[in-house]
Image 1 (cartoon, rainbow, N blue to C red):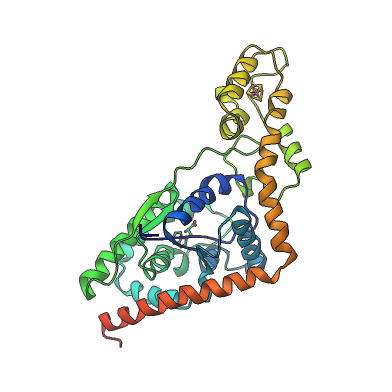
Image 2 (cartoon, protein in one colour):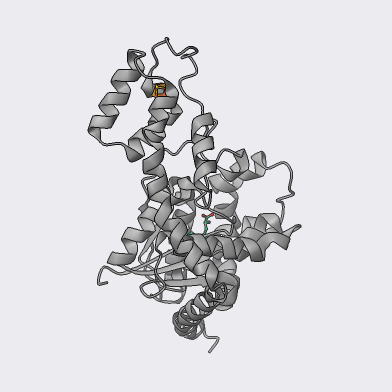
Length: 329
Ligand code: TRP
Ligand code: SF4
């Protein structure tokens, strides 16, 4: 617990899948044993894009936190909270908004990309442009030293560092500059061979029943050039192999699958069946823990409440410093 403070957040997207687990959450699990961690639900950030239809937010927050707890994010070690419960984030966001040049936000690659790509929503709103400013407030209000994020979020942390420097230059050294901890995400492909994503409808969810997991795996695309059982295949272009053998098989099983595939001595079903029990065994303790939490549903609210109280103590102390530095207090 001496290595400093880590903070990260996720927008409440509801139930999480294997991609979240093997990418983000496995990393969080490791970090929570090494650092003082704050992990939070970025529910205000969800509204930057979903402001027209926020109905599902309550349920999505709950489902996502249940998944965090189920994989082993431990409220005794880690502060788990909800952004909108700690109002100080909003106050700091207003103040950072005063010093953030529009040009920094307009040139943000994530902003430009999403503005161009997302067609079903109007994103020409202040909240969406200011997304990285709110994210900066989330981070520096806890004086976090390290921020674990995927490569897609790295530009946001760069903006955060710039805003932090500017604040410290104007008002004095209140904040440490947060560093990016780039999460190495293994390539987790969905059943259609594309990147696993809820919106592609190709995901294996942590909550999927064993039967459903089995079915999804058996239906998953393989080397599309391997049309018949007698055709040899190429594991290096097989989405199933790339993701699931690499995740779950030891060197011997990988060698067996590679050999069997390239010589057509095994079929895809046999190849997949060699992995399914290991995948199910990985999910089993997660689902067991989830059942425990679901037996006492009020516990999620209690954990969020307690986490928000702890977060608020830190955020509140920082805001006194911030107001004093600017001359507001
Ligand atoms: N933007 C992040 C995402 O979409 C979520 C987030 C909000 C975040 N505030 C943060 C992540 C602060 C790290 C630190 O995943
Ligand atoms: Fe993929 Fe295995 Fe089929 Fe080869 S045998 S194409 S590695 S699923």
